[in-house]
Image (cartoon, rainbow, N blue to C red; front, side, top):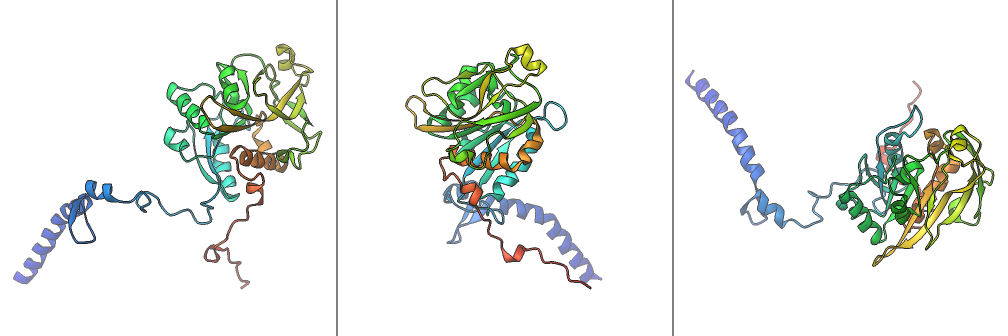
Length: 318
C-alpha cells in the first residue's frame, strides 16, 4: 500500500512540474557547447537562413520561380462579376502550378512583402484609393524597378494621374466611363508582341470596356490591342460609343532617381468566367512574366516536377 501511495505521489508531482519545465524549456535553449541561453538571446544568434525563419517549401513548388504578390479585394457587383477573392484563391494555385512563388492578400502589400516581390498582380476595385503608407510602399517598389500588372478596374481611383504614374493609364472613379457588360471584339494592334502570341485578331468576349482615360505622355504606353466601344446604355450616357480605346498595353518607364520599371494592363475581367479562357490565361501568363522582367514564356513552358512518393496510384480492379 505504501508503494502504491509513493508511486501515485510521484506521478502527481511530475504532472504538476511538467508545465513549469515546458515553460522553462520554451524560454531557454542549449547551445552546441551545452550552455543554456535565454530564448531571446538564442534567437538573436541564429543565422538569417535558419529553418526557424524559413519553413520548407511546399511539395512541388518551384522555389526559383517568379515571385508574385496578388493584391486582391473584397467581392463586389453581382454573381460572377468582380470576384476578386476567387481570383486570389484560383490564381495563387494556378500560378504556383506554372512555376511561380506566390503570396497575396485582400489588402495592399506591405513594404516587407514588396521587398522580395518581382511583380504585383492587382485585381481589386478602385486600387487607386491608397493610404499614404500604401502609396509610399508602392512608389518605393516601382522606383526600384518592381513590376505591376493591372486587371480591369484596378487602375480606377480619385486621381487618374496618379495611376498613370504607375501603369500608364488611369480611370477616374465616379465618372461614367464604362460600357457595362457587352460583346467586346479586340483589334490586335501589335501582333508581333510575344505577349499576344496566340491571341487572334477579332477575338471576342462578353465583358466590360473603359473609355475617357487619362494617358501617360512621356513615355507613352505601347498599345497591344484596342476595342471599339460598343453601343450600350452606359456608353451612350458617357459619350463613349464608337471610340477606339486601348484595352491591353505595356508601359515601360522610370520614376525620378529610380530604376526601369514595367507595367502590363488588361482592362477586362469584369466577368470572372473569362479568366478560364485559355487565350486570356496565356496572355496574362506572358504579361506577368514580362512585367517581372523574366523570360516571356517562363510560366507557359514550366513543367512541374512530380515526386513519385506523391503520385496518384490507380486503384486495382478487384
